Length: 348
Image (cartoon, rainbow, N blue to C red; front, side, top):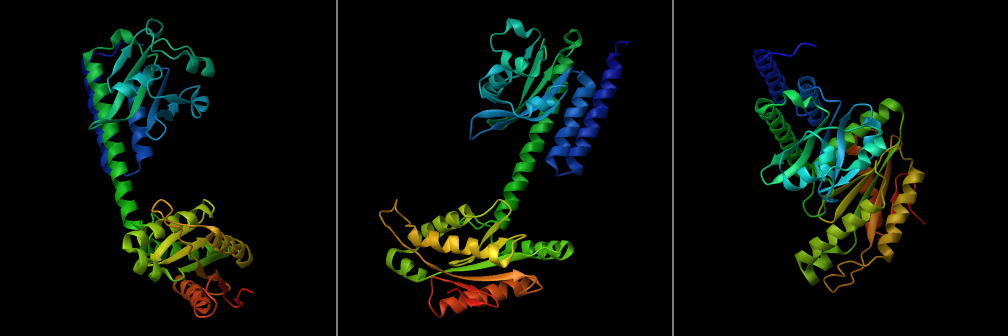
């Protein structure tokens, strides 16, 4: 293959910058933007394998978010400690590393090659930086180092800066979306998101012939907690109960704070009898739990619950909530600390 001229490279760079800029401005989908950037990078540098490693800040580790090449499947489950290997060093120090011969560099982690059965000769690693943090690392393995000049280094850094901007933008959008659908006090979804989710669930369940069930939960005598211990303790109690509710649910279930001391649980693809198992479990867990222990209190809280199932008890989002709410009030006005079931009455 003939070596590209400087002019050819310049034209290629401009074309790639144009394509990446178009991806950045036309899509909010982070995966597709990063895929475009990585593909263009590979087209320009022609490495044997290339990957994007993201930083998992909670675990202080790197994982392979995108890996391309013969070892991509193996790399999906590989994690590096921040500081481990060349990529780990770059993530830790936030500095670019170009290593023409990895066997002369003590930072090289041989275990990845042993797992993938590949032979790494050279590595180029560039951090994806956002202000003071490193978000990830782009790694190119076995690039032809003979033609790797300052021009190529500058171009690579520019592409990595684009990738960092894309990640930061996507995270900002995610945070804004979370703020608009999340209740500040409990971390559960809010009432606005409940109505949107119910509409989606009614449509989906109608189309595929599914049932789903709604639990309406109202805490008993919650006002006494606020009156006795103050609103800060009341808020702490709501947060702990929100956490307890969420812990009893499957990944596909939804928990919402409806307002005040009211909560709603949406159980997709769940019959009334299956939902009653969940409702009983919530009731019994509340009965045996104590709250606000860190504040030196051992509060015990009970709840009145209502249960309604789509499509047997209601056919639209508004009506399913109304039915579950009415069943909750049936319990609230009689025994409290129990479950009311649409078309069946209060649980014996």
